[in-house]
Amino acid sequence: MKAKLNILPIVAIMLLLFSCGQSNEKEKKSVIKKDSVPLTFSQKEKEGLAKRKEMDEQDKIDSLRLDKVLSDALIIATQNISKNKFQKEYKVDTVIKVNINFGNHFTDNYPHLIIRRYGMDYVYIDIYSKVNDKFKKELSHKEWDMTYVNDTIKDINGDGLKDFVLNWYGSNGCCLKAFSDIYLLRPDKKTFSNSFEFINPTFSPKEKIIRGVKYGHPGETEMYKYKWNGEAIDTLEYVYFETGKKGKKTGKIIISQKRAYSKNKKDIKKLNSMPAEYKKIHGYDWFTGKGYK
Image (cartoon, rainbow, N blue to C red):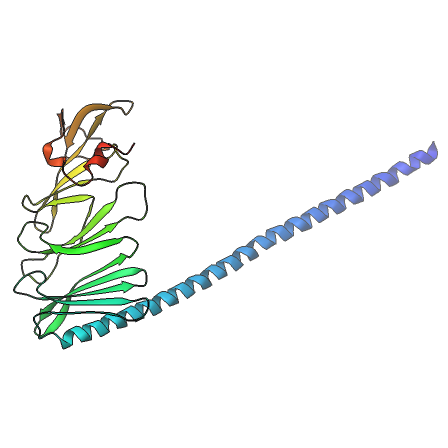
């Protein structure tokens, strides 16, 4: 009996030492894990910075290369500046293609030079006016080649002067997203305004009006109506379906100077049918939702 009692303190001491050892081991492992986190993060951060630096350097090289391509194209155009019109297209390499087009693109009085550079994932368009046998840059546009659709020259605002229009289609998002960037030719017939961007537009130069469909799901978005005011745009109205408390359409059409989500609903008109002026615009079927559900 006495022998068994003497063993108990020894066993207790051994258990205490064993538990302390486990505790110390856990603490060591915990310290190792905690210390390894900053080291891992620091390494990833360094790798990220190195990769970013590499990309920045490559972008700089590409930018300098494209500047050289534009400079060379400008030299070719200048050599032909005395001509009434001049056009040349060539490849710099397997990636970059250049189009030089000089002539009376916008007016009969003042010629313009248009240089397009295709390649390096973007389309670059630079427009110059002719001033004292030299070319002066008036406009520069850069568009991702995945979104670029085309560019054209026509009177957009109804002032009798041809404007520069670049059309592109959004690469992200769920819905109708055809965009037009507009550069208005100014009355001096040489320079251009800043860019105006419209989504899903239909232009009516005779009315000096732009109608279009805003971004949103079919049958759930709104239409807009703007008017040119020199180098500014006046908002005339927004058009959308009236909905009840549960979001169900009532059959009424709302005409308002405020957008559909606006809290101020005082300045509105309710119609039983859609005004005819909107039925022929680009994206009208998207607005109504017909054929998309």
